[in-house]
Amino acid sequence: MSTPPTSSPSGTSPHAPIEWAQPARQAAFHQWLEAQVSAHGVQPATVRQASADASFRRYFRVDTADGSCIVMDAPPDKENCEPFVRIARLMHEAGLYVPRILAWDEPQGFMLLDDIGAQTMMDVIQRDDPLANHGLYSRALDALLALQQSSRPDVLPAYDEALLQRELSLFPDWYLTQHRQLHLDSTQRDMLDKTFQTIVRRNLAAPSVYVHRDFMPRNLMMPHDPSEKRLGVLDFQDAVYGPVTYDMASLMRDAFLTWEEDVVLDITIRYWERARKLGLMDFEDWHNDFGAFYRAVEWMGLQRHLKVAGIFARLTLRDGKPKYLADAPRFIHYIRATASRYSDLTPLLRLIDKIEGTEPAISLAFPRLTPHAGGRA
Image (cartoon, rainbow, N blue to C red; front, side, top):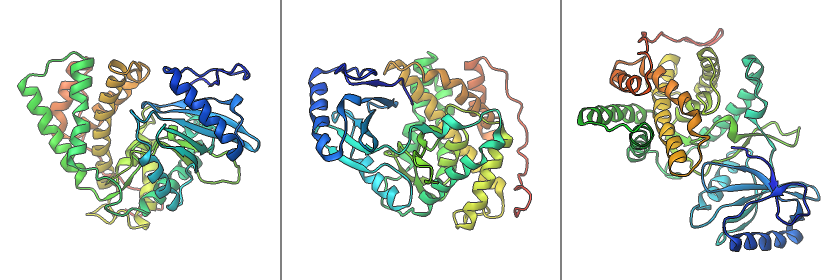
């Protein structure tokens, strides 16, 4: 999500100018930022780009006498900031480390936030030494479990059948048809419809909790304050109430980082051990059978991977952001790995192998999984 740092077009900063498509919005932004000088001590000449994401939101960093703040630029005709404000409050009440909202110009879509960190968890992960990251992932689980423990029904939108199906449709609509230029015949379309129905049914069977919906290392921040033990949590505005498996699938099957399965199992078992002590695994045989929970995580991850492959194609073809589609092969690998384990997914695997020109995956019986030493089976 990070992009090269830039700054105000005033010329008084060493940072490159921030680009604005509309001069009127540029003028409104600088007028609003000047108004924050007296209230929050911002130094407008220091404003520079901090990051951008897959939406139309942009984030800038601006210095203050005591440190720095983050400015969100969210054009109101394209972005609705109300969920961000509401869910930030909900997550703060749950004990998560999220930015405080210092100022919000709702009509114009400008917001001033706490700067809770300049480095993401992804920035400091040691990819070549998985064991060295246990402390980081333990802190990530702290945040996730705090969020899930605070869950209540009828507060966040439901991650229901309609939403799950709408997300899955992105795969045939954008990845297959638009990106791969595949014309789906009636047999292929019928197969995908039946497969998607199975995926949705399996996932809706899981217990529901608050779901961040993009809980991954690029959205978890290393705090500026060394005494703050919690990781910062960002990009939560699309949170919903849905399957308890979703955020673990996001965390361990990341869009921009792939771990070997022994690492995925290790961290997922650590989550499961902690979650069952909190009563979050009190469903069917999940409390006693890690394998049952892990299979549910795989089915949830499959839904996410199909969705994201479609989103990445759409971002490239519709929105002109080609960097995302470059990571699509990672998701195709995730999809194939899961589809090779389950007979219900064999037709999907065959379609993907045909499209991608890959060798058919070897279907192996899924092993019975047991927790690490010291855990209860």
